[in-house]
Length: 77
Image (tube, rainbow, N blue to C red; front, side, top):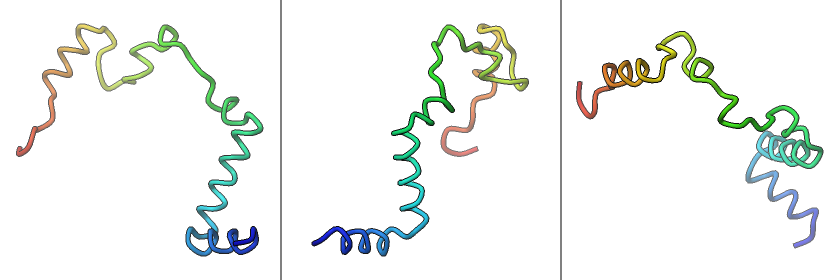
């Protein structure tokens, strides 16, 4: 199977949107755009307040108690 036939079959089976998204993802990774948009952060730089927002307490012990008090139903309500 030559390259043109393979490209046509990929386009036919996956569709133009999926092919475009994958090509863009590969391009962003190759140029380093992914790393610039999503920089790595250490765990020490992330605070509990950033992760939970305004819905829950920011103190670790109070957050643990809040989480235990608001457990979702396991299987049935």
